[in-house]
Length: 531
Ligand code: NGO
Image 1 (cartoon, rainbow, N blue to C red):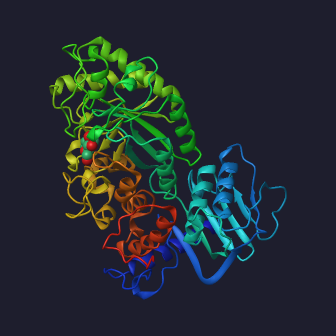
Image 2: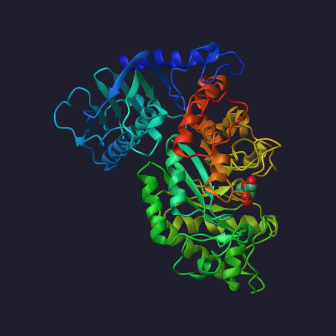
Image 3: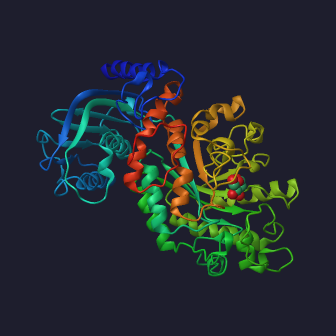
């Protein structure tokens, strides 16, 4: 009861500060609506946050990180991640210990398994007093999110990798938080341009800071096949050897994929593998002639057209191929989903396309996964467990999928590969230009027909890589928009406010610089002086 009352009070604080915000850009770098300095820059905005001004808790070489034992090994991993972060500002990394009895004053205490119904599966409570820090949650996931919030309350200089002892002060305060949606997704297209394991891990690190919990990997397309399939080895031996523009491409061995899945899982991110079909399959068709209706393999493709390729849906070998691919990937993927693509088929008739989708869903189910498909699959008869991913901006495209769960990723709002404005060199613009404010000022509930709003499980931010060849390109298109989308996925829509967000996100500029992120200096944001 007491928790409930307090929560209401804090929500009121968060909502009041945003409701009072006048609708204009901040005047001074880092200054909030009304001219005060922002009290905090936490993104996504917590459900209830009360941060003091003036008083702080100091992290010193004597600070301990203490965690309460849990069945989930990720509690200890989360504690070790926090120690690594703090180590950059201390003469040596802070000691990390399982708790035995009450922790000494001045410790940072991490507790998962706290019984508090208000926190749900992913919520947490963060309390910072002059005597210590306590992050409490019902689950290891909640604890991890509490640590991400704590990290954002630390000075941005903590993000510099080189060890350089300096004082670390965190403002006193209290936060109680839990997400709006269970699906807070990012997608990376590693098919158009290949990104190796280290690049994907780097992206995982960056999205984890914003409490993203799904990474959908687009593992195959016309331009490349990116995951080893032992029963069909030519997919990577031939089909993985190029990319858009004619580069050498690449692929993940199964061992590398497993390593990525584990790395993501240690950051509470579920990998969602996608093998796009029946179209977007030129790399597979080029690798195995029998998958083509005419039995002839086309050349590898390095352009950026879409919709021209298709698996031969009338041949049984096509379904043997699909079953083998799904079986091998499913066995490596602990997450419950397999994304079967389904977008942009321009070759099949609608009945052929529907029959294909209806035949592939049970294959996915047989291998123990729930199917996900782009919204083109909506007119087919869908299994109740199939999830539809809305991408074409018109809401009508998902109308036929009346009772299926929906992931909302409208290209005109959430596609990170759209240009910011007419001057942006990277990116595409077929769905429009998406400045940071456009990426922030929308709500998924308005993107689908209203009777289906209750089917929304969350949102996703896809980054297609036709024009994205380096991590610098990737950073530029993802940040700051990824932060805006993370707030839509996590925070309450009532508390969402552009003026308030634009002040907080400005303070992520120095943090991104410290992390080596090549972010877009949007003119809509009053960035602090970063010289
Ligand atoms: C579309 C298309 C992709 C492109 C992307 C570019 C979907 C689901 N299919 O989105 O193949 O890469 O646009 O923005």
